[in-house]
Length: 296
Ligand SMILES: NC(=O)c1ccc[n+]([C@@H]2O[C@H](COP(=O)([O-])OP(=O)(O)OC[C@H]3O[C@@H](n4cnc5c(N)ncnc54)[C@H](OP(=O)(O)O)[C@@H]3O)[C@@H](O)[C@H]2O)c1
Image (tube, rainbow, N blue to C red; front, side, top):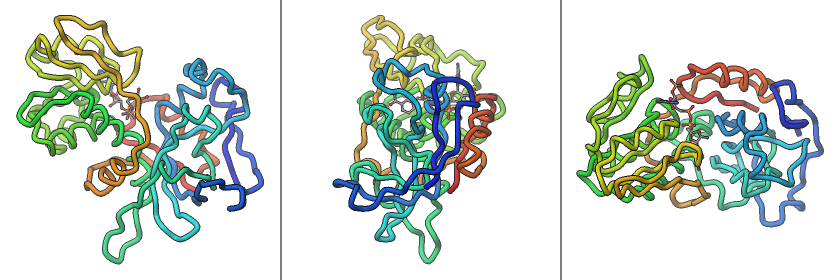
C-alpha cells in the first residue's frame, strides 16, 4: 500500500511517498480495513508536519503518517467516512494512506443517494470539522432564539457550525472572509459580517471562534459563552463570560447525523495522494475556499 510519511518535523520536503506492506485483516484486532478513496487535508496536518503540535505527542518520532479525515470502502463493501483521533493515537495512525485499519468508533456510513455512487471526495471533507462544529455548539449550550456569532464561517468548522446552529434555531451572525459573503449567506446566517467589520460589542449570547480571533470575546454579552477551537485562541475569561475550548472526540452517532444532514461542503480541489506535498504548499499559501482532498 502507498503512504505519505513525514520523515521528521519540518518543511514540505519532509513528506515522502513510500510503499509499505498492506496489513491483512488478521492484523486488524477489532479494527476494520478501509480502502481509502479520499483524505481531506486540514490545517492541523500542516501545523503537525511543521512541529507546532509536537508537545501533544512527545514520544513520536519520524517517520509517521499525517491525516485525520478519510472516506473509503470497507472490506464488506460499505461506503464510510470518519476521522482518526490523531493525537489520541499518539500520531501512529494517519489517513495519508491507501489502506487504513480503523476503529469502528471512528467512522459511519456515507448516505448513498438513489442509484448514484456515494461522493467520497465530498464526504471526506466533513467528519473532523462537522463533528467539531457539533461538539463546539454543544459546549456553547445555547438554545433556540439565542444570538450566536460564528467567526471563520468561510472555513470548514465555521461553515458547518453556521449550518448546524441555524438548524437548531439559533439567531446566527457569521463572519465571512473577504469576497465570500454571498456563500456564507447561503449557509443560512441571518446576518453576515465581513472579516474587516467589528461585531457589535456585548451583543451576543455566545461566540464560536472558528477563526483564531480571541478579540471576538468583546462581542459576547456579560455572562455569555465563548468557545475556541484552539487553546492559543482562547482569551482569558472576563465579565463572567465562560471560555471553553473544544477538543473533538469520535462520536459515531453524531458523525452519522452530520453525514446525513445534507450539509453544504466545499472541495477546493483534488490531488493524487502522492502529491500531498503540493496540497500542503497550496494550503499554506492561503486563500483556499474549501478543502483540498487527496485521492487514492
Ligand atoms: N479543537 C479541535 O478539536 C479542532 C478540530 C478541528 C479543527 N480545529 C481547528 O479549527 C481551526 C479551523 O479549522 P478549519 O478546518 O475550519 O480551517 P479552515 O477551513 O482553513 O478555515 C479557517 C477560516 O478562518 C478564517 N480566518 C482565519 N483567521 C481569521 C481571522 N483572524 N479573522 C477572521 N477569519 C479568519 C479563514 O479565512 P481566510 O482563508 O480568509 O484566512 C478561514 O476561512 C483550525 O485552527 C483547526 O486546527 C480544532
